[in-house]
Length: 373
Image 1 (cartoon, one colour):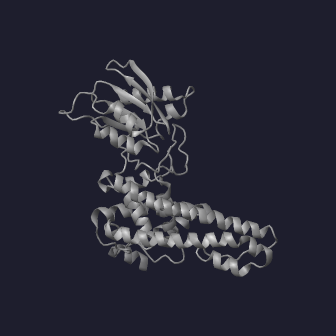
Image 2 (cartoon, one colour):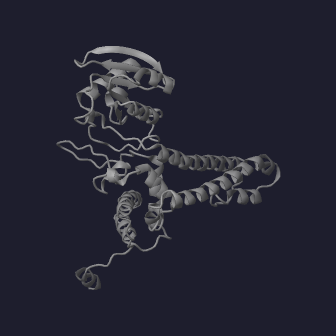
Image 3 (cartoon, one colour):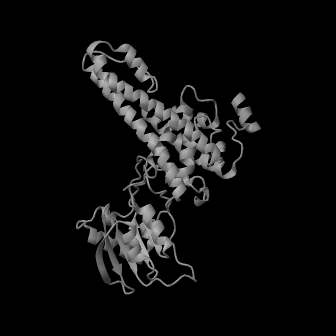
C-alpha cells in the first residue's frame, strides 16, 4: 500500500443526502498501474459486468462520465487521489478503502484482479465502514507535500553515499572522522590522501552538491510556510519543531477539524501501541506505524532533541525524562516514542487554538509545598 498519497483519516460511511440520486449499482475498481479491473453489482447484488480498462483519465471518463450515479469502491494507492477526484466530479459516490484494513484482499487464497474487484464491490455494498474509508488531500496540499518528500529523498540518497564512502575507506584499513552529514564532504576531503582520495573525489563532489540542494529546500520550506501556511508559526513555538516539521504536520493532516479530539492524532500517525488483547492476556506491543512515515520520523527526531542535552527545560521534557528514568535502554526508546506522540497531540492543539505555547506551566501551591518538603 502506498501511504504517501493519502491522508489516511478514517471516516464514517459516506451516505448520500436525501436529495442525491439513488444509487442503482456498486462498482469495485481494482486499480493497476496500467490496467484496472472493474466489477459491477446490480441492485440485487449479482455481478452484471466484469471488464478491464486502461488506467487513464480518458478511459475513466469514457466509462463513468455522464452515466447513472454509482457507488465506486477502490483501494488507496498511487493512482487513487486523481481517480477518486475525477469520479466524484462526475457525480459518483467514491469510497477509497484503507488498504491496511482490507485483509480479505491482502491475504486472500485466490488473489487476482477479478476477485479483488468483486470483493471491493461486495464490501462497499454491505457496509462501507468495513473498508475504513479514507479522505485524500486536496491537490494543493498533495503537491506541496510532494515537495517535502523530494527533500527527504535527497537526504536518504546523501546518507546512502556517505555510508558507502565510509565503508570503502574502512576496507582500506582507514577511517573517516565522525562528523555531521553537512560537513562530511569537507572533512573527508581533508582526511583522504593518495589513490583513494582520487577515486572518491567525484563521490564527495556529489555529496557536496546534495548538501547544497538540501539547504536550498530548507530555505524554500521556510518561505512556503510563511506565505502559504502561516498557521505553522504557532507550531514552531516548541523547541525542536522547525519549519519542516511544522509544514509536514499541517500538510499531512491538512484539516485539523477532521479529528474529534487532539489525542486521536497520535493514533492516526501510528505512534500508539498495537492492541492484541484476549481473554487471558494483554501483551505490550510495538507501535502500529500507521499513517505517514516521514512525519513520524520528523516527530521522533523532534522528541530526541527535546530529551537530548540541548533541549530546554519544559513540561514535556520533564515528563519524558521521568519515563526514561524508569528503566534502561528500552525505557529510553519508549520515552522518545511517548514524547513524539504527546508532541503530535500538542501540535494539533496549538494548530486549532493558535494560542501561545507555555513551556512550563505554573504548578499549584500544594505541589510546590510538597516539592519543597
